[in-house]
Length: 400
Image 1 (cartoon, rainbow, N blue to C red):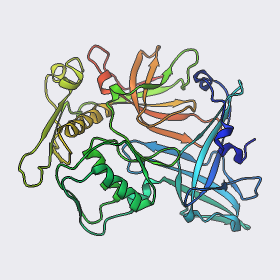
Image 2 (image 1 turned 90 degrees about the vertical axis):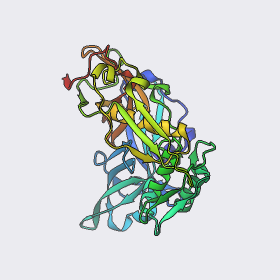
Image 3 (image 1 turned 180 degrees about the vertical axis):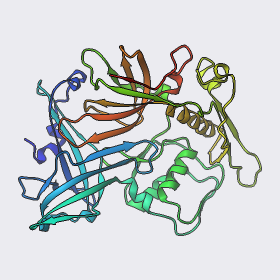
Image 4 (image 1 turned 60 degrees about the horizontal axis):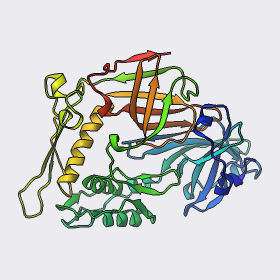
């Protein structure tokens, strides 16, 4: 039942209901071994094939918004020394599988990873290998410019991103289409990574940073304001609760700005500079507890950034994102929950009646032990627009 057939989409025809995720299940992990061109080779650690095993409970996956390499992880392989794969020439795609009491099935890929093996322990012809995992954006992070490079004003930013990713990795990028031309020349120093170059361009046109999705495809999407994103998951207490009893909310807003200022670099041949100012009062209203109206004073981000932006709209997006990022860091919740569909930047609802806590948040991190029966942990940051003065301001507290 747990062989290679689980890699075939036709085997996953009975997805569970949302209610099923709150209940018991039989679950396990498999590791799809891929060639460098990402064709399926077989199952890494297939007991049936006699190729050694991937140790259950010895690995984890970690996904974090804002980290240069968003997806990282580890596994442990054990088997005959002569039957190790060539770790430098393969990729792996972990799969989580679950079968629920009603017969429904959930099988989901959890990314495509490059492998690194810093050590190996040998014993009587057998070897134990700890394997570090990095998602495919590592390819762009390690490809660095050998000279100063520039893109002139008027460059099609989307086409430039596609060309950079293809030249560096050989892969296409799934990018939201749009007409975005550079307002001014963009220049990068010798040694700048291709990932930094791509993300600078994405930032200039108001897009999220580049990431590799759970099937391993490079992806870039337009930035969407948190309040405009749908609520895709609900962690609610009571019957059907999907999260662990104990949780900790942290809040540290002493230095959180309620005003951010950014300037654009001037167009080529012009001294004109665009400016965008984002304030809590204007964007989230004067009832927000960190607004000037409630605080009684401004906390201005001390770094007035000069950024590349294709136009005033893109600059406004950049300023707003800088403001939101600071506000969302102020209130954070690491939450242990049953495994369920989860993506970074999801908007989720968290509610706990006994604790008097109820808010919308953004999933900024996901920690996944590759162990049967383990909790997954989402790091949820409260959405800035939810933090109104009419609610009790969050305080560091432990609920059990």
